[in-house]
Length: 127
Image (cartoon, rainbow, N blue to C red; front, side, top):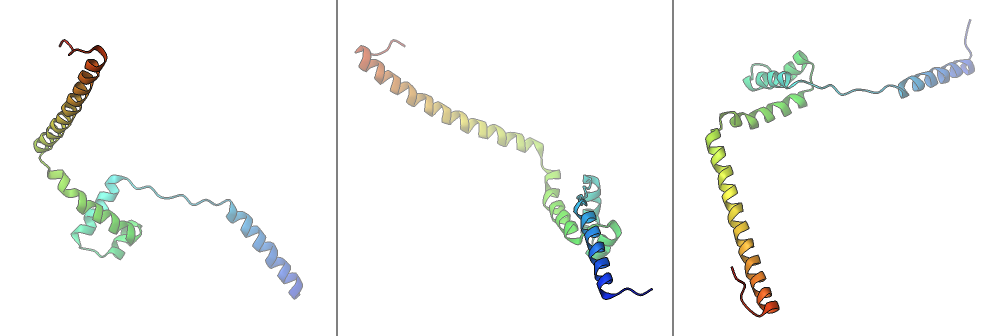
């Protein structure tokens, strides 16, 4: 049995509509990788034993993601060896600076209030 061109085009239209209806409901989900997996892949990339394309085939991850994880890994590695005692000292210094600023603000407020008290009551406040 032979299809005429008309019936063939109707069948193609029908198949196209079915495929469009099925594809509308399809939602692709992003893959989420654990930090351990990312570290493992990044470490392999840093070692340099395999190329990015070989790593992407081995771990089934896009080469751009491997490059991003590698650069992030290399950027964050020095933070592992930071002396925590020095970090605490810096935070104390910041607090001292903030306290000096607050003292300056309070002194200005005190002088302002002293002048206003003298204007209102005509005498210096008893402190």
